[in-house]
Amino acid sequence: MSATTGFELPTRRGLFFGGEWHAPLGGSEMTVNPATQESLGPVAVANKEDVDLAVKAAHEAFKSWRLVKPIERARLLRELAAKVRDRADEFAWLDSLNCGNPIKEMARDAVIAAAQIEYFAGLVHETKGDTVPMGDGVLNYTLREPLGVVARIVAYNHPLMFLASKLAPVVAAGNTVILKPPAQAPLSGYLLAELVSEVFPPGVINIISGDRECGEALVAHPLVRKAALIGSTATGAAILKGAADKIMPVTLELGGKNPLVICGDADLDKAIQGAVSGMNFLWAGQSCGSTSRLFVHRSVYERVLSSMKRLIAEQHKCGMPTDPETTMGCLISKPQFDKVMGFIESARAEGARLICGGGPPDDPALAKGWFVEPTVFADVTPEMRLFREEVFGPVLAVIPWDDEETLLEQINSVEYGLTASIWTKDLARAHRLAGRVESGFVWINYVSSHFIGAEFGGYKKSGMGREEGLSELLSYTQTKNVHVSLT
Image (cartoon, rainbow, N blue to C red; front, side):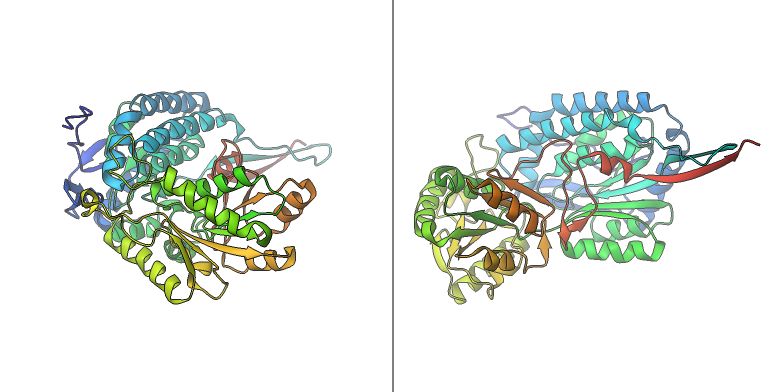
């Protein structure tokens, strides 16, 4: 038990499927606190045989769940949302321990997840069909029917928020779901399973932890009718290849190398704060939507750089994730730390100008964790790795610009297209740039936030499909046409 919070680590750490806990045939491995390297105990690792059992349990539950009245599905979702919200502080503690993000921010994740669940509970009656005019003597109509068993695989930067919110559209549409928590941070998934067991019929929502074998087995299983991922572009490509063998639909929310544009006429105080906030330094830049390429008009370039350096120093300092005062956590693992440091070294070698950061903090209390200070490089050019490739860490590339055509060419030259943020007082310019950037979600004079009902998703290698809105719900249905002769 934590002496400061009174919370305990989960004691049930098996595989949760069919409404029961099962010992993993695949064994277990240790999970750690990335800020201290302290062991947080064993976690279950599902193998192919475990996955088969879980999928069969979900498939059996689907036979009855698909017939449950939509209003009852909505009631159960709302009940689960209330339980998640009530345990927000406990979920935040678990996630801050296991993934290294600040506890204060993780508490918001549970609240957001509960709101998303309630949103989809309110959409259950939107899985409706249409009638098609065919003339006298004929009735033609469409039905929207659930798919069956759906696999949802989520990333480590927001474990609970992704797990809890992403189950909602699946089960609201009448499907059953198997959730795979992130291998690096599965602990909050065990607590969520406890809450699910108090609300839903056995087999409707199943949670199994594991590594790559688990994910591959889920995608390949013949009874899984759709897979959805929040994760890296490389993992998304692997899932897409696996789904191709089955002709199975997928939803992919993947990486980003997202632009934030500051025009010469922007409200600079707000724009500079937006540039700092958009990097998501709170969770060490580990966010697919981070605006990690900052394009600044040359007329205000040096002013932006100096003000940003000051703001970052004031607002973001690495600290222990479980400390409520911490404003920046750590990276998830040594491989991620090494990757981020590799980008920093390549930026130095390629001639970028270091403005701040550049390595771990000089604090003995943080020496065992995977901490990297907020890092900003100026004078980044399109030839540099830092311009083109996703870091998934606290490293910002700043690029000067002069004319819109060159700006747009550089923005759209990368293989990603998830988000973009545009800062200007010129309404015509704002809409012009928003219409031409190759990104699926654009903020104007704003940054970072998602909005319930506003659909989120990427262009190009940032993914396919849309989430957080009505189309996500409908993507977990299939359409059937019925033609009736009345003569």
